[in-house]
Image (cartoon, rainbow, N blue to C red; front, side, top):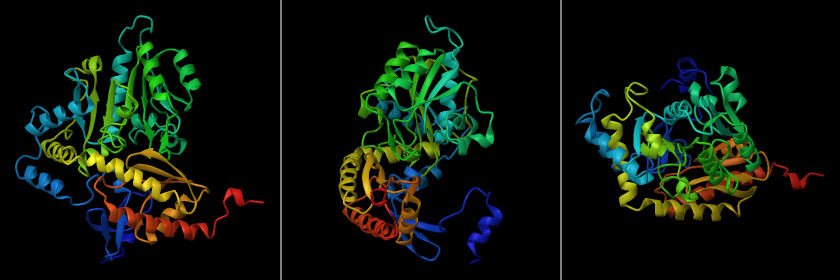
Length: 407
């Protein structure tokens, strides 16, 4: 075999290094080209909710590929109709809900921007016409396409591609900032992640989402939740908003919905379902029968086997387990989306040390390790994780001075 690093450097777009050449997976484990085994607790960044090569996933892909993989969007298919009805039921939209199927989370968020624009263009008593402002939250990550990137107020991601889509305003994670942004008027929608995964599994302040719901209602604006990372059961509920008792006007999701097969969705509630009309949006590949059949099989398995009970139980087990490890200052998140906060800015070093010990995690910020393992992990995977992460933390701690140890 040629040096795969040379191949990657020569043939792949220069967007960052690759950590290993992975060749196969089974359950929560993956193997590289040298047959080294890794425990995958990142799950393709919150995607592989059933692990790797799960029989339900394999059977769904194989059966549907042998039946009907793709048709144009001039036609409907049984798997497409089934997944739309399933998502409406799981989200609790009621009869008026509607679903659009896309290929990814960033595409679902692109559609959310268009939904906000359509809503803002409608005359509104007391709120004025031509409302174009879309509020987002500091630290947010909504995707890499130009519209979704415009919702992402992180200079390193967005600034090389300015100018961004106009009238998108970032508020701080405080109720005061939220109130002030609405007081300026002209808000068509607020797009917010219930838990900010890419920012380091950051939870919103208590009452923030409920206040956003109240303010969007009062100002005739839409509340759109980006559940690309938190949806499809990742937090132990089908959607994170169900933990908050808040009903949005729309929600986007992707990642775990297909357990590794690309699929995204926008789900609308009530009158927000009436905003799009023929000609305003569509997709060539979105919601094709192959992707839809896989999502039906994955979500059906999670539902039928009560897998979300395991998500909640293993999440609690992991939080308890890491509490006693070196450098750990606490945890954030819900279910199996967990941010492990460190007492020093050494997360990249810990992630590298973990990989050397056969454990895949990542460091979204200098002081946070993020994990998003499969919903199906058991005692064996939890114990292996704690052993390998504990060893990595101990090694890094031995060469680290924490803030409390400084003179």
